[in-house]
Image (cartoon, rainbow, N blue to C red; front, side):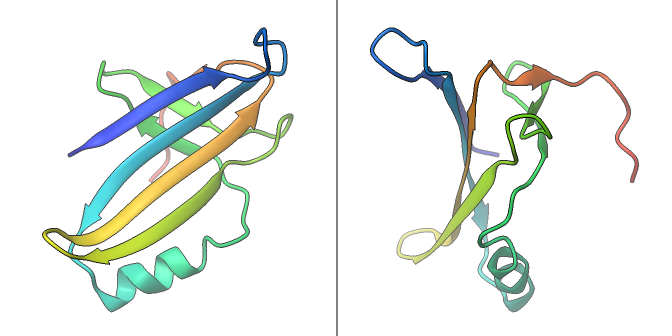
Length: 102
């Protein structure tokens, strides 16, 4: 599972908040995945993910708004979807320690 996460300060002195970005690759193009990703266009989402340090993090909330999801397809050396989730926020993304209902 290959992913990357960054939270970069915005503005000259970091006073304009942060842009949190999560990038990952979903292998294997298929109709169901394309259908699901098509329905993320223009939406605001709360995304919970596990970072590479073993921590659970949250992107998006009711105060600063939801995260946006951008998806690109590729059929070159690796067939699949490049997914980028971004969230402009006034503070660093939160940590999540609760249970996630399935």
